[in-house]
Image (tube, rainbow, N blue to C red; front, side):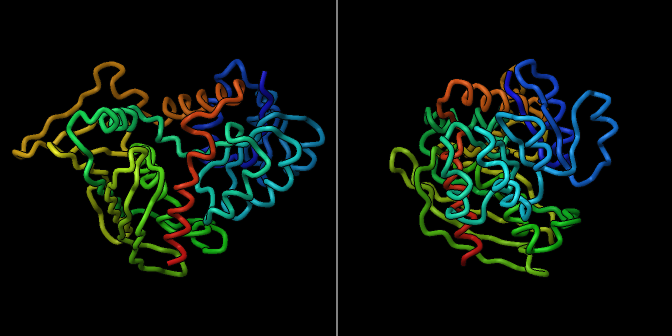
Length: 322
């Protein structure tokens, strides 16, 4: 039985992580810690100890893994308190603003002992497009184009303050798309990173740019991105192959891949029972957690071990240093 502590019980932890963790028979939720006592009564009804002081939680109940879902600006303080008391960490995203910060959080752990909550890696459609690319089903992959824009996107709460949020739209939402592009293409290196950005109160609210992905076969793939809160966009990733293009809708549950032929015809890769599964936040989250726990138990790296996210941290660093 793996003993797990949870630091931060906000919306993502409450609606996604908690139901998944409570459904597993190989995990015991040892304690929950949060500065707010809002959820304490409900947790105590489930016999889950609740603390507002992390050091008290660590001293009262030992645990193997800690899930950290607190805002970015609180991460280092939490990490410094737990790093010598646990053998595994699950960080919710966003993770790091630089490769140096990435290394700081990981240097005392083996790769299989840490992961980041870029859980869309385990969406059925993401797995499918990754296999299509690897098997060259539609020829060579030439480029990846990312478009995400939503005029209703809000920088609320701590996200409205640069020193607390760490970054704006690119850091908070764009990293999901960038990580997916790097993951699905088996990226080993990125080159020639370029971006143009608009800021408001220190937070990037619109950006466009490009970089080259060098994959595991040393093939160059161009990646372009456009993130904005100033207008709505198609909100999709388009993978351009020799013989067609394929649209991936990363932020839509139960979505399907759309194949666009060179003759303007479209074909939907529909959900044939398990073809696009997992396809919602809970099933994707369960699959991701399952892979992390198996990797942790077997002490073997996987496609979600912390070393596989280093290029994502590098892209973040390049974006905010330019």
